[in-house]
Amino acid sequence: MSDEVLAAYAAATADDVGRLLETAAGAFSRTVFIRVIEAGYPDIRPAHVPVFAGLTIGGTHISELASKAGVSRQAMSAMVQEVGALGYVQTHPDPADARATLVSLTELGTKFCQTVIDVTLRANAEVDAQFGGRYAEKLRKQLRMIADSRG
Image (cartoon, one colour):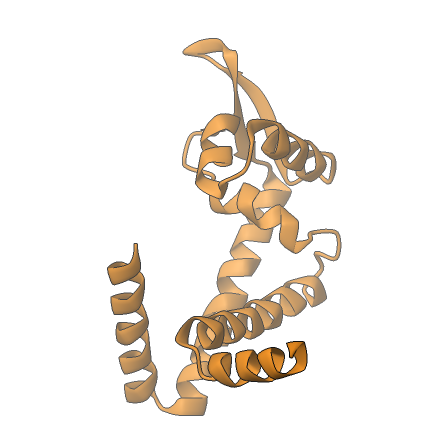
């Protein structure tokens, strides 16, 4: 019985839009991540990405980073400490609220983020070249529509 259900599950989800989007996004992200490592940042792991993704100009509270990433404040604090120990971010008291801690990029973190930008732009250009610019732009438009409609 369970074999039949598993076979039916595999068939039903083979062309599932969510699964296909997740697989494609994972492949693209892995490509970018491998290239970032090859560019000289072997110590950054995918688990560190939410720290960088949530940063804003002037510094960001750990609680805000946690909220953006959908993790607890304690989990984000641990991530920030780890990324900070690697030299990519620094923490400092919020001048407006001494109880709060702000996180900001270091010089190394700024260079890392610029590398991510460069690598991502190249990877996107490769998608354009592989599928044709018009098709790739149509794909982006459709993906934006899906993202916007699903929240």
